[in-house]
Image (cartoon, rainbow, N blue to C red; front, side, top):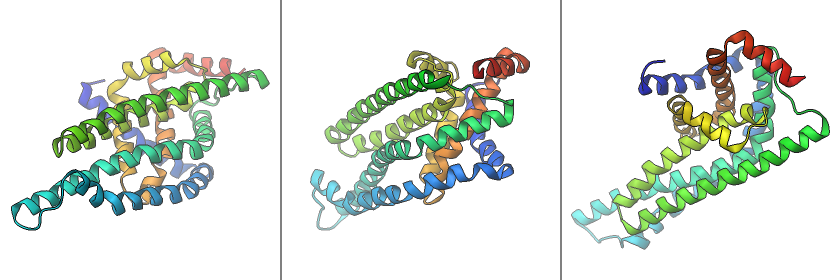
Length: 265
């Protein structure tokens, strides 16, 4: 559907579609309100630490000049460090939020899929539940490792290349955040189908523009104070809608809905 830019914009729009669906189905709000209340404390604690220590971190790399044009450049440098710190803190917050809100978002995603298709795949019995749990633990560990490695490279660049490196960290941190937020948003729907890690990554590559658009919109919303706390639950809803729409388009609505009912059974 259109070029990459059009697909990105379409993907970003699923965040708004998710919000609209929640607004029309008030029963979904409870699955958003509870994790939001729990993660609010973590969000404000991380943000406060970044604002409190960013100047000290800036001075550890470049001592603050006493006056003149150099001092103005230093203040610009401190702003870059602040933005880089917020990008790094955002990844930490996402990790904490995923632990706290993950179970709620899983239930939310399943309810959304039932709303739009009439059903949703479910693990069969204790054996299916344990298989699903095992896959989730392995996949989350792999995602966390990849995030950590990528951010380590970006952080290293910021230390080796003052000013430019921090800008690379801020831009690269946003890209990495958007990419992994998109993975998280769709993972609830893919995990219900017991997909392997390689198949999940293949799906994201095949729909890279649309999924990155959803991830970028969510990452931007995460930066908005207070409102950002609902970003991941809405992304879970939007990711579910995106997956269902793409699957119906590729395999046909009737065939996809029948496959969902068969998987549930």
